[in-house]
Image (tube, rainbow, N blue to C red; front, top):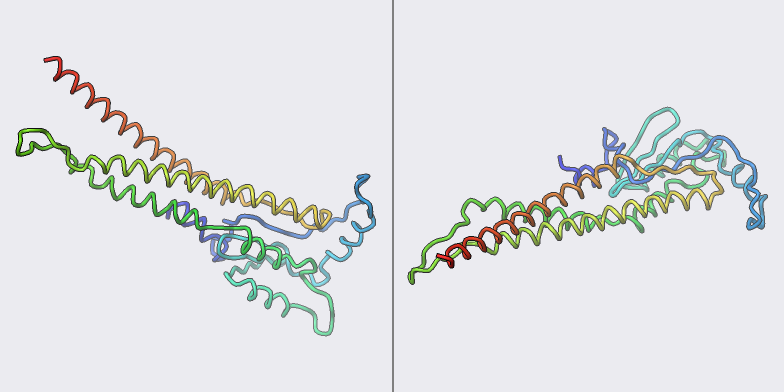
Length: 251
């Protein structure tokens, strides 16, 4: 299975794919003292947020967000993944103690992760990069048939010379779209996690998914190698053709 496919399928299944996520959110267990920042006009809000953020019905440990799904980890180690945030939220609501207002998700981590997935994450560039790279390899599969033949007037005529340059163009475009997508993914995941921590005064702890970043950048490196190899091949063929023309002109 190729890296982009695994990356897109992250958090859609608890069977291994739950470890491929963009960002994770979890509650901090230990409280913290109010920061001594002069810009903080109301330092007392920090303690209030921490008092609210501690789950009374200790069920949720972590929420992970991927391109197409969310994963919920409970304190007992059980993990549930779904493409529907509403299904996970319904399960958490069902865990609430009967007749009590206590909740296992006081700061609505599922809602935050859902909004991150729906409004910030965009997987369209990855699909475009995969399609362009696939077309590039289709053109390269016809390479042994590229040759020169003698025309009716006795001149040499190249057969399918444009396919080489077309493959280079597709490979380069695939690399550009892939690079843009992974940069977007990396920056947005880091920014969303940092903002979640700051806006909750550290009551939420965030982590960027290392596996997703490794898969994304590995795919970009592979695309870059393909584009660079095609560029070298095109330049080499052009140089050989130029040397042959000069040699024939000399004689």
